[in-house]
Length: 169
Image 1 (tube, one colour):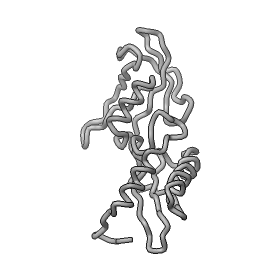
Image 2 (image 1 turned 90 degrees about the vertical axis):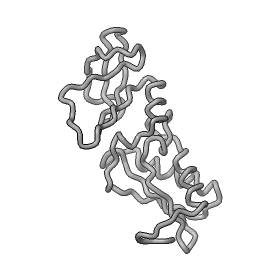
Image 3 (image 1 turned 45 degrees about the vertical axis):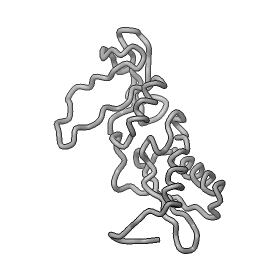
Image 4 (image 1 turned 90 degrees about the horizontal axis):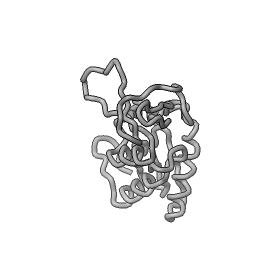
């Protein structure tokens, strides 16, 4: 493994990062961990083990253990004899880490994707969430929490359909 400012990614590390990133999220299987933006990197060490760095969507996320086990299974299935998944909290994960493809998949699945943040820009005081079913922004909050802590339950007042909204972080 190369350390310090001269860190370079080998072809194997890039391949393993892509493989780790292709693992489905255990709570939102419509997304991969790569699309969610939680896989931070893969490094091969001199002793032959692979280290995957993973950032949870929030501290204490209960899915981190399942994510780690799924990544280990995917990489060992690819012939890597030992895989270690390390959880890193800094830099913190943000909904801005969700890829454009991930946002598209969330909307297609019926979950309103989080809005991207403007770098250094003002934070909106009001939240208008677009209904993933009909596109209306005339929605109301039903519950601050939904099936997972990172989602809220909303209802569209136009089409009357309830939907999950992935909260902005």
